Image (cartoon, rainbow, N blue to C red; front, side, top):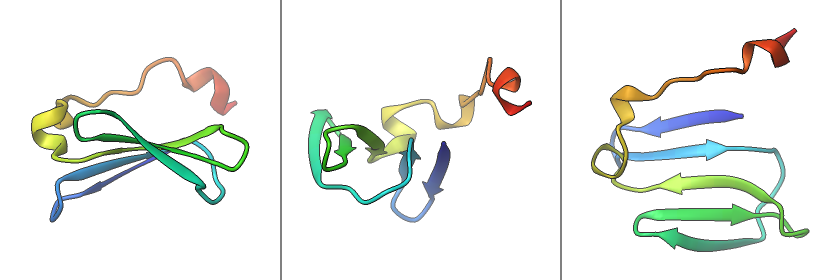
Length: 68
């Protein structure tokens, strides 16, 4: 998983798996889900991130066990 924040466009992209996207759907205002050809979720694009979510409060919890 990779988080990419673009300050210029105020967008946050959450890349959940590698591979090309095939379809996109707006699942909430300013939130677009990207899917691969098999319909698996591969990413989330959050526009106007600083007003849509608490960007400054992003935390990662519970993933340390997967890193080993």
